[in-house]
Length: 284
Image (cartoon, rainbow, N blue to C red):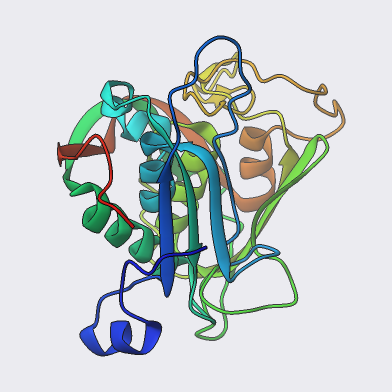
């Protein structure tokens, strides 16, 4: 049974604070010996169950990563958090966007765990997104369309992986938006250094297992490789081999968009830092 921990949607809108309609966080007893760790989150905007968020045996680190949409490299302090796990259920107001859902989860962590935080910028190894030698091949957006995730659409936008193939489709995007998507795929910071100021309709297809962050054999100094895992190590992925006939993410970026990723010893990373957090949540 869900226990209310915040105001109903109508009152939340009046106060200006993004809140779930009702939410429950139940601490699990410590587990000893061999056990299957679920740590599985489901539901929310742009999923098959947009009205309910669930996370079973979810760690505090997982909840924070979900709330702030963090890559592992952005959260170096996650290993210092408690090993306690929780079952979380939260009812999401109808029509909530992805950004509003993130704000609701952030406020839930603030209210229940006393979480306070800040972001710091730090230089670390990563990538520079630049224009390829033959110039950009970007399609300018012709109207002020909603950006990816801000409106319902019958055509799926964002990154979609299917088997060994992946694609990224979105309208009205800046190259800074593209850099953020590439950072998500690679698990390392990507600086936008294209110098392009327009908004574009992006359509990119590549071999879905080819996005890891390790130096390749490109003579121009760009990286190549496969998809980084959730631990952010950038190692070779598990699963089926990539389709050899499909371009890697790096090659597809040059061939289809006229952009290129270049190795950077000093890319700018935005790191999440916890100021204070309680080891256990307040009662429902």
